[in-house]
Image (cartoon, rainbow over all chains, first blue to last red; front, side):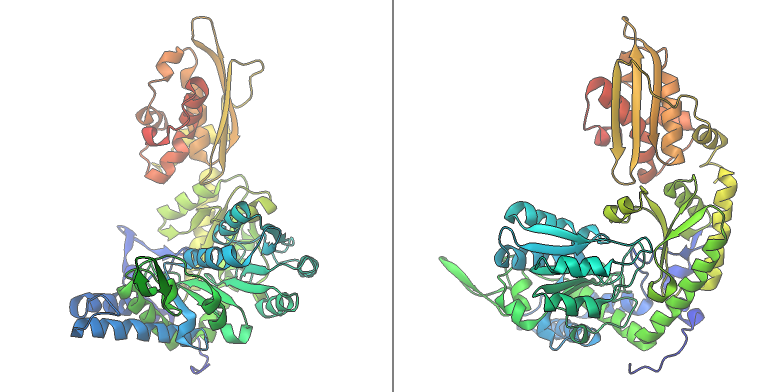
Length: 413
Length: 130
């Protein structure tokens, strides 16, 4: 990494996030531990977006006037920054979408419906978010594609022996999460990608939980597609990315039809634009692209190695402290292969009740199945409470969480 | 917190008065809240005059949903089915004695949804209830 590795200065970082100064209710400060759902935004991101609307707002790509030209340049520069951030070979491999979900659907729809036939297999895992299950279910229903799932072991890691055995069935595509949004498991992407390629499958990675928290280099990992969202990594909602290898994107038919994705339109047909524009129909989220770039620039300023090290320290401490609480059970692996996510059950107390009482103390966590019902089924639990951490969280906030959990215990005595 | 987890709610959650199944029963219906996985089944016995003579519930869920099921089931014993038809959100909130935001309202109203669906076959009540 360019930035030398150093510990994050959380006090300084917190001052950059206006919302963290908020009291949830009078006298009750915010302890925001719902980062796996969405992160908070630094002032720099908010300012870039306001500045765009105050000084530059115009539609991009075909305008001749100055504002349109400024906006087009800014939008395309944002794409270039994102390409660099994830180590893509060229900006042409960065397709702007709405979010990770849309990116995965784009591949399922455009690549899947055209390159897969009835009987072809797609290999997923049991720890996927619904966004990486449902598009493939839809493809299975429409096209007769068969789905297999790599089992999750009791410790929350993937069963890699079973993975190898399932690769023997020659899937055409393997799609899995880089980091589980429930268990926090960081999967061995390099090894799994290599094995998939050896078996002749393409690889798509759901990077929604990894790009915000770990150094990611798509070229080094040699993945074919990689999907992630801006809003989980300090940027605005409404914009995400599909990275795709250039040759693959070229060979794929378009997804949505409309303006910007075409080269020529006649009454009897159309020809498509080159990637990435081929997959970007209609006016995109322009201010959001600029906000996304500002978010990336903020993260680069910290250094992704430092971001990861900070979260590793927090989750290590959180797991230790959570273990002290009687009746509480945390799911997922140890801190060496886990991101900053801890999902847990509390004996006899429903996760909604846990979250509600924590909220009374200003502590924001998530309760439910976190859009990953199959992994909850796997562990025979209907729901969990999830605390998830980011660059601005501190060990003091972990202490506040633990104190809150003792209060929950008290209420339910 | 004192408001939300009133003693009655915690008490009903831990010591429900009407948890169980009725065999035989005249009505039985089960539904879930897919958002959080809560499940409730309600059984009823009804006499020839259309009055509920016995009622019970089973299921799992958060304190709000279980307490409201217990209170609701208790409140309808001795009442004519016709009256149950008119039960609304406000009645449940009155039983619980609290105000609820839209997310937790779904938890509180699941039992009423189950009851109305079971008795009247009303399947799409959620919007109406909220």
